Length: 148
Image (cartoon, rainbow, N blue to C red; front, side, top):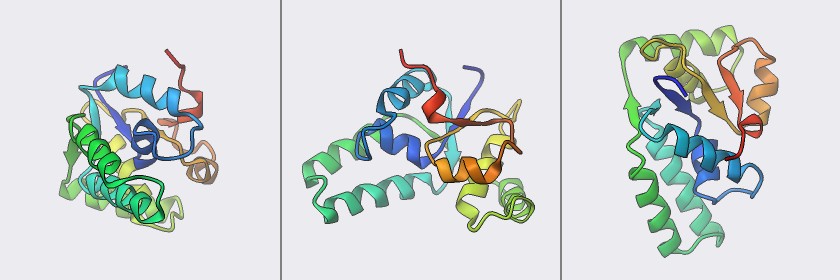
C-alpha cells in the first residue's frame, strides 16, 4: 500500500459500520491493509467521535455500541497530523479548488504533505470526488477499493 494512506472520516465511519452498508467491505479491506500506515489531520478524531455521538442521539447506536466503536477507532493507531505547513496548504487548497470548508482541504493537504507524498487519500464522499473532478490524482474513491 505504500508508506502511508490518508483516510477520510467517511472511511472510518464505514469501517466502524455506523454509516450505510455501502462500501463497508471496501473500508474493512483498506484499513486492514493499511493498519500501521494511516494518517489524518489532527481534528479527525473529533469528527469521528462527533459522528458516533450523533448516531446515539438519532437512536442508530446504543451508548455501548458507540463506546465499542470509539475504542476500535482509537485502536487503529492513526497518526494525527497538525503542522503549520498543513494549515497553510489547506487554506491554499480550499481557495484553489473552491472548497466550501477547510475540513476537506485539510485531508487533501495531509495527503499532499505526507512523507514521500503525496500519499493516497481515500474517501467515501462522492460529492467531494465529483467536485474535485480528477484534479487531484492521489484522491481515491472507497467504492473502487478491492475487497479482500
